[in-house]
Length: 192
Image 1 (tube, rainbow, N blue to C red):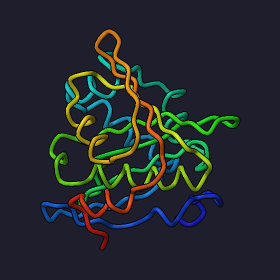
Image 2 (tube, one colour):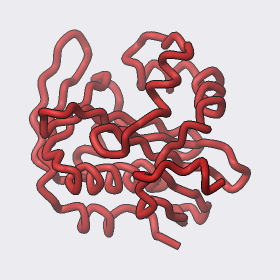
Image 3 (cartoon, rainbow, N blue to C red):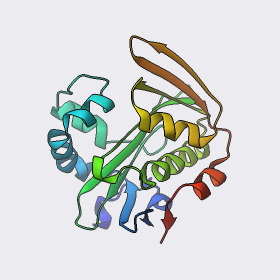
Image 4 (cartoon, rainbow, N blue to C red):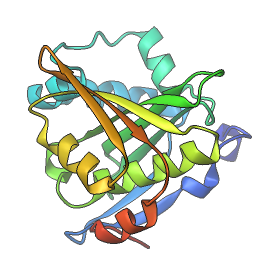
C-alpha cells in the first residue's frame, strides 16, 4: 500500500469524520488506484446527480477522462474523496488550477443519501484550505440555476462571491479569504 502513495501525497487531508446524522466517512486525497471506483460511481449515478454535476450533459467516460480525474499533482489539481464504512465512494470534491493563475475551478458531487449532513461543507472547507496553502486565492464554479445545494453551500461559506447567470447556468467566483473556521463550526461534521 505505501508504494502506491505518491511522495507529494498530502497526508494531512486523510481523516475520519462523524457527520451530523452520526455516520462516519473516511476522507482522503484521490489516488490513481481510484480509477475503477470512480468510473463505476459515475456509471451508477442517478440522472439528477449527473445533470447537476455536468450541467445537463452525460459525460463520456473513457480512459483519457479517467486518467485526468485520478492523476492529480496535489498542488494545482487536487481531489478529495469520501468513502463510507463499506468502502463505497459517496462524494468527491476537486479543484483544477493552472500554473500561472491563483484561480481554480471547483466542483463537487455528493451522492443523494449523503446530502444535508455536513459532508459537502466538510469537503469544501478542506479543499479551500488546501487551495489557500498552495497559493490559490479564488475558486470559480459553474452550476445550474436550480441547484439549491450549491446555493446553500456558497451562502453558508460567507465568502465574498460574485455570480452571473446565462442560459440557466450560474458562474460563481469566490474569494478564498478565510472564515473557514466559523463555517466549519457551523456545519454538522466533527473530526474523529
